[in-house]
Length: 271
Image 1: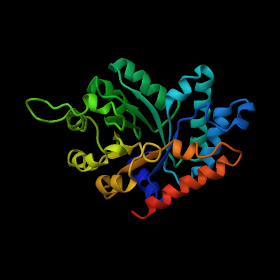
Image 2: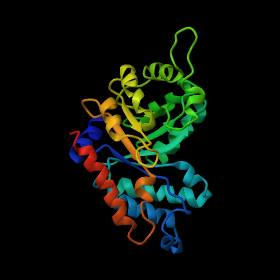
Image 3: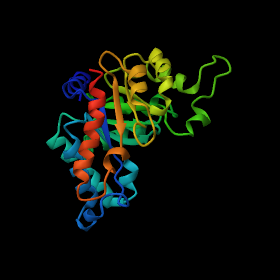
């Protein structure tokens, strides 16, 4: 998916909502467990229930890889289902990969060629040659971890260079923004760090930001949009648990739809 198609979908739906498919066998409605592939069946219902309000779906790879081969099969079926039924919706492999060039080339092949995701999250610690293989694909995106929402972000991401005075996340943004463009590179910025978005926009004024942490993690939607939105909106705002685990009964589809609708309605006021 290219930049203009993503912006067009956001404006058409008046939404920046990404639904995170952090699908856990221990948390999905119990009545699904008797099915042959409960994870896929759960995902399918969530996707159908929220697609009208969402511009992106983001499977978290850990939840699938932890189940071995069966989990990988569930992931393959999930991404195929989205691509076939909702080709306009942006798909993100939340994989947080990042390795030397040859290995990154294989990761890119897995997520872009084999699974046909639109984007994959990557860790930038190993530098440009670990990111470049992902950028070789036309109309595909790399989403670089910049400033995350977890408490451990304070361990390294705010460390200052003694010579420049710049914090590590600022150096990541400045350097990596030279490797790609707003057409193929995004950044992860946690919603719980919304107060930093104005500073981040000084460095990357036009790139899309993937913002996790709305909902269960306590992120403030108004603060995120006020500080981080661009003329093209420039935000993909993720909610996972607050939508997909809002109910564990046989009415979970309806409740998830209502939760997605509520968030989309909140977002619509910014259009």
